[in-house]
Length: 195
Length: 218
Image (cartoon, rainbow over all chains, first blue to last red; front, side, top):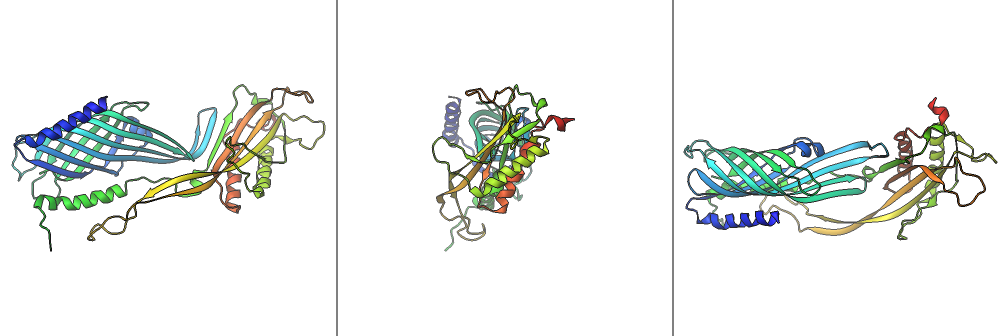
């Protein structure tokens, strides 16, 4: 049900945004990410496997509504003996998290001109499709859920003639769903476009 | 003939190309060869007294395990001597006395083992990359879909606790004291597979320090 509500909101936003008087902007970004909390316990370490797509409709010079989706992959390979006191298993183990956020968003921009860096801050909210998978030997354990999620974000829109379009820091919080606890990761978004 | 590209879109093109490459490389590393999938599992049985074990006996055959659906086949018989030899050596190394051939001597535990080979089928799906992103028309061949299979070998053994069992009395309840097994990809009957069997058996004893004869504990 929650997923339907979020998707309905997203569709409504996408339908409404073109009616705005401002311009639309689209961006593509690379999203290296640092897992936090339970995500870090499952698949620790910085990952460079991530991509994001951003779309914003500027309703005024300082305010934009938008949508964002992406894909991040966290992965860890371990080898050793896992012993719970009764059963012991020696094997290679591959832990992988595939996370695909789908957000609607609202952003406030600074008032600098396009020739200057423009700071922005905003909030993304929506859902994250998240798959946690463990492969041990020939056995696979997989848990897939849709998580309600929020993601505060701050960033800077670089001048129109800069090579890079924008840089931002986004903290993704995907609340617990199914048997999976809350998942978090901090991602750096280095993108082209959005101007 | 060239197609005019809006300036804003032109800025996005390298990003889109890079993004496509990034996605192509996004799938993380997994098993790279058959040995990566090998697994050794051991389980102690709650309630078992492991402190007072001295002797063992074992069968001289590797039985064929029942997979339940009749799909299993015996493993290559050339592996059987390797399995039996390694299990016996590991028990002796753990301090147990082999009384298999001693008439009238009842062992504390009886080692029984079985193995089975079954076929695992899998589906694969991939896109084959054929060019650099800078090359006009860069991209991928159409996706290929297919099926493949590999043989999975499973070797299991148990120590049956014979303490308290009266010889010659039928239908007595015999409990397992230890259950162990190795599971992985069986290749041809070669030295690699034999090494995997030996390594797996040794690892099972290593990760089960409670399987020690009383004499070896002192």
